[in-house]
View 1 (cartoon, rainbow, N blue to C red):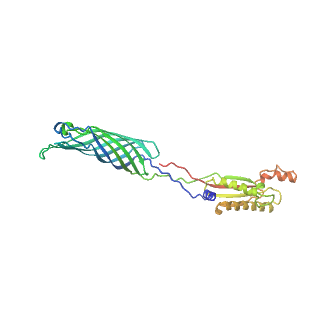
View 2: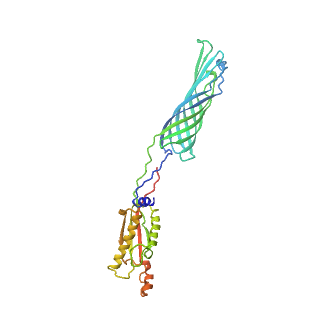
View 3: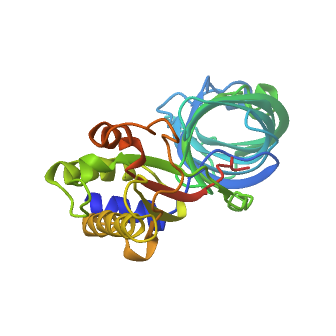
Amino acid sequence: MKKTAIALAVALAGFATVAQAAPRDETWYAGAKVGWSGYHDTLMNHAYKGVGDGSTRKDQLGAGAFLGYQINQYLGLEMGYDWFGRMHYSGDVKNGAFKAHGVQLAAKLSYPVLEDLDVYTRLGGMLWRADSTGNLGDPNKKIRDYDIGVSPVAAVGLEYALTQNWVTRLDYQFVNNMGDEATIGTRPDNTNLSLGVAYRFQDAPIVPVIPPTPAEPERFTLNADVLFSFSKSELKPEGRQQLDDLYNQLSSINPNNGSVLVLGYTDHMGSKTYDNQALSERRAQSVMEYLIAKGIPADKISARGMGATNSVTGSACDGMKRADKIACLAPDRRVVIEVKGEKEAVVQQQ
C-alpha cells in the first residue's frame, strides 16, 4: 500500500473531478409531469342543479409540461400547460361532466437545502378553459357550455438533481376558482400533486486550464552517524529505521512530475580528492537503493556525492584533538534528500 502511495506521490499520475448538480445562471430547462388532480367546491348550480345529486368523481389523473429559464440560483421564470382531468357527475336522472385545462406563467423561487436538493415555490397566474356538459335524461336535451378566465396559481415543491442535466421534482399546486357558476354551473378549485422530470440545457462546466507552478523543494537532512558506521557506507539497522520513518513522510508528499535527489556529504577529515568524495558517493548510493527497494520509482530518484563541500561547521572545529574533532564535525557528515515537484492549481468550476 505504501509503495503504491509513494509511487503515485513521485510519479504523480492522478486527477480529480467534481460533480456539479446545481443549476447555472441563465439556463433553459424543459420537463413534463404526471400526478393526481383533485377538484374542490364542485356543487353544480342553476341549469345544472340536480346533475350532481349522486356520486361525483372529484379526483382525476392530471398531467402537464413546462418550460423554464433559470435566471440565477434562486430565481427562475416558468411557463407550463396543465390538464386537470375530466370530472364526472352522476345523478338519478341528470348526469354531467366538467373538465379544465390551462396555461400558466409563474416566478419560481428556489433555495438549496442540500447539495443536490432545492425547496421551491411558484407564484403566478393561469389562463384556463373550463367545459361543462349536462344530460337531462333525454339525449336531445343536453346542456353544453364553456368559460375562459384567469386565476391565481401557487405551488410548493422539492427538486432533486439526478445528474448535471437531469432533475426530478415533487410538486403540489393550487389553482383557485376555474369557471363561472352562471355560465357552466360550477366554479371549483383544483389541487394537483405531481411527480415531474426536467432536462437542463447546460453543458459541462468550463474549468480553466492553469499550468502547474513549481513547488518549493522538500528537504530532509539525516545524520550520517546514525545511518552509517564511521567511514563506512553500509546502512546500520538504526539507519534503516530512520529511512523507514522518512519514507512514511515522503508518502504524504504529492508532487507532480516529481524527482528525488539524494546528496551525500562527508566532513573534511581524510583525502578530499578520493576518500571523502568516494565515501559520499557510496553513502548516497546506499540510501537511494534502499528507498528504491521501499517503492520509489528508480527513474524518479538519483544520487550524488558531494564530498566535504558545503560544510555546516565551517572553522568551528579547527584546532581540536582528533576524537573531539570527529564529534564536532558530525553535522557535516550527513545525507540530504531533496524532493522536487509541481503543484496543481486549484480552481473553482464556473
